[in-house]
Image 1 (tube, one colour):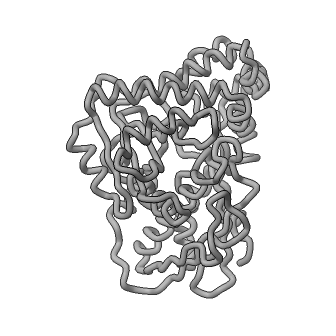
Image 2 (image 1 turned 90 degrees about the horizontal axis):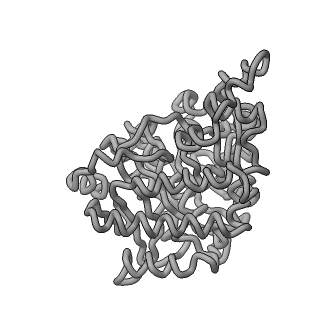
Image 3 (image 1 turned 45 degrees about the vertical axis):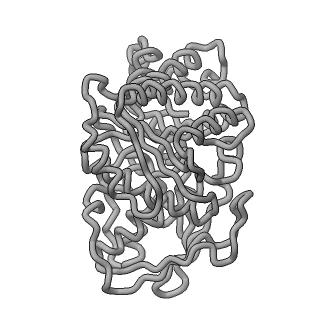
Amino acid sequence: MTLSRRKTLALLGGGAILAAGGVAAYGVTRTPQSALKPWTAAGGYSEPRMRALSYAILAPNPHNRQPWQVDLRTEGEVTLRVDTARLLPHTDPFNRQITVGLGCFLELMTLAAADDGYGVELDLFPDGEDPTGLDSRRVAVARFTQGGAAPDPLFAHVMDRRSLKEPFDTEAPVDPGALDAVLAVAQRTRVAGSVAAQDIATYREISREALRIEIETPHTYKESVDLFRIGSREVDANPDGIDFTGPMFEAMALTGTFTREGALDRTSMAYTEGLKAVYANVDTAMGHLWQVTPGNTRTDQIEAGRDWLRLNLATARAGLGMQPLSQGLQEYPEMAAIYADLHDRLAPEGGTVQMFARIGYGPDIGQSPRWPLESKIVNA
């Protein structure tokens, strides 16, 4: 679950900043420090693989779990595995979304290598793949070769990419030509979208219902709440999960106005107003785009992730905001009816809808926290 920062602040903040007086007020002004350093460190490595990986760790991924582990023992190669401690067993029971995130990582690594004059050859799942879940087997072996790779203009927008979890401007329509330009960057999957008023209304309604189901299903909602990082201290200590930072969240953390326990209490203001906040996001969608693969193998999921990264960069290039709305594509029983409905609408000829998102114009937001690259290397 992703709460709209602005909406939640307005509803929950109240007098929290006034309550955080004296010495405690210092904490209100703090922003994450170490959690944002990987963004400034990106590109600052001389070794080609490290340089490429320093960008790859900035890739979008579900719940910001950053589930990648890399092995650099073999000269000129990067071996990618998943960190099985960072899976999402309730909202992503077959690890499909995690695999899509790993595909985003691989594509961003490949784009960064190309910008440095290196080609990357990927050998996906060389030890075999299991459709029911990820394990310790290799996800990919990436072999770097000097020369032969042309830089991709999308790479210039890596630092601008965001998953925009704020309400969009409903007075700013998305031009169909802008949507077409975004969709044109996909290379491996079937992508489509719509900015037609009727479609917007339909997919807003479906997205709202999918959110309601996820939040009202105790085990899926708790999985998200357990990953809340409230305030800069928590974010710096654990720069993954769903971050809540900024002056008023700092104040609410200090005063206990916003807590994980409160978010789980359905009678609390944190819960009821938080629900309104997430609805405010989907209710302001100004268009939608989606992605379909012919099958649903692990390789299909990686390919989806590679194109998803490209779509993210293309929306940044266009000045658009994009937020994935993955709830309706999750494969747990309570979501089955929404899942079937979305597939009937978005993939009537068959295939698997891998990703679905809202698009529109929204405010500038900060970068997402990241673990440092060195913490993701298991063997140097």
